[in-house]
Length: 577
Ligand code: FES
Ligand code: MG
Image (cartoon, rainbow, N blue to C red):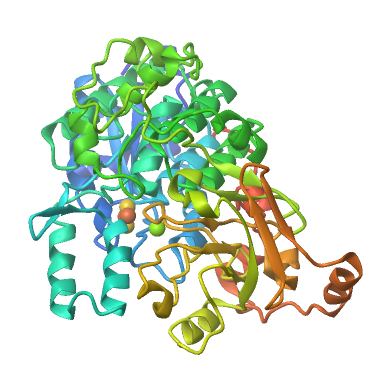
């Protein structure tokens, strides 16, 4: 074995030993038949897998991992796959977001504690992407993200239907008697008809786009359908490339730079991406030492038009996006207008401009040119005011133009249970000019900041054909949802934020152009209510939930744990025996 000249790889602190510890580190791995030459100093690549049957969106990840493995072997590396906590958006209660930080800790510690020189992160369902990138960022090894890809188009009664988006619209139709329960069941089987993640421009697709825009993924990462052979090809290329990256010592912090985050925010505008990207990118940036704030989101996204006509706010689905050329077309369009830091380096060794400058748009209905956008403003608007001193957000491209500047009477729900108990009651004193306010659904309040901010409208209003009202909360909403929904109000109600002080009948003004959210209550009254405020009952006083509630930061700081901000690097820990 030739080992002495390869001491710089951290895996050699395990495998190059000629003593008892070397025996430990090599011998147990040899139980699967790895030959001795695997330990000779070649890059050891971790394949970080979020496969789980409880995360249907990631159910094909064993296959993707195999293709990464072949790529690593092609390039002379030593691949070792390992599982981390998987987060399935549709199953996990009270919300997958409660566990994002937990999974990130699993990822971080699994990478650092093991003999790894580089990692490939397999990510799909919403929270798996930020969880893995946050964890990997706090270690900062050479890292490539491989997204699992979207499902094929949903197809039902001759029409394409989209994940989440049509779930929401069909459940409203069921509640108002426009479709039957049998229709509903049939649609369930028709909507999700292949492996992959949600195929609308929801959070999973948005985060896959963020991976590509940040340069952490290979070009084309965002849109190739999960079941398309080219997804496997991309995984194989990533496996080959990560070995090179280890040899070149290109670590994640050289990719996830301030410039890369700026590109990602701009791309989020260009795709009309999910509001959830705001908390996730801020959390990721803070892990890797990049300053990123809500104001960056507002400022950088402000002039970016939405080019992509995808659900939830548009017509098409991710498969259409892929066929039209995918994210490279959006990046090229934005870059040509000066909205992309062209020199940002990406994991394939080329700049983002080099990767995308020559791509062609094959369908300008799906991806519009910059000068004829789908909507003039695809970015996220950050609102401030006495109702959200540390910010709240709204996605103008998903909102109704007539509500963007509106004053209305508050109808307050103290909790999600209160909302469910009263929303279907025809005697509820509410009309479409009212502003629905939902409290105690933020990070500490839910706990986990669930996707409940897009409150269902009262049936008596829906029956009149009205589909949108202003809704304000400290919650998030699904990336597949839509409407004039003000989210992430900070500080949250359960932390004593001003949202907690709103009462039925108060008047609230939303003015998106002015970026303001104002509660019309005079200061004396405001102070009186503040003095009388009692925190809501907690959610248990032990275990992970206690850790979460005690340490979670507010939405404007990415809802990470206070003690997880930053990183601890990739230093090799002590021997274990
Ligand atoms: Fe997994 Fe939507 S539920 S991506
Ligand atoms: Mg969701």
